[in-house]
Structure formats: C-alpha cells, structure tokens
Image (cartoon, rainbow, N blue to C red):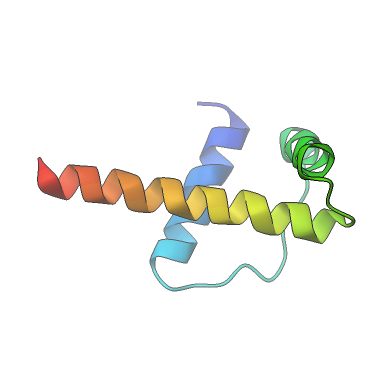
Length: 71
C-alpha cells in the first residue's frame, strides 16, 4: 500500500468518526494530488484543493462502509 493510500484511509477514518482535519502534512504524493485537483477544478488556493481531496476520501469511506453493511 502506498503512502497516499494509507493517508486516504487515515483521513477517511478521522472524518467517519466525526473528527476534523486541522493540519494536513503535504508529502510528495499528497502535494502532487493537491496540485492536480487545483489545476483540474481551477481552484485558487491549496487549502481549497485539500478540502476537495478530504471530501473525496470521506465519501469513499462512506461508500465502502455502506457496501460492507449491505453484504
């Protein structure tokens, strides 16, 4: 599992448990993801792009939980 995948799981778990992300460490993979989201969506700041990435992680976690509970 790459560090990006581990980070996505970490973020999703925090948000699923009702937590909030106050500080986000930007490693190489996450930095590249933020830059991609910022270009793709035409966002002005890195914090906006990080917010989009965190929301994506949280939605993926919710989908996985829902599909696991249905099985």
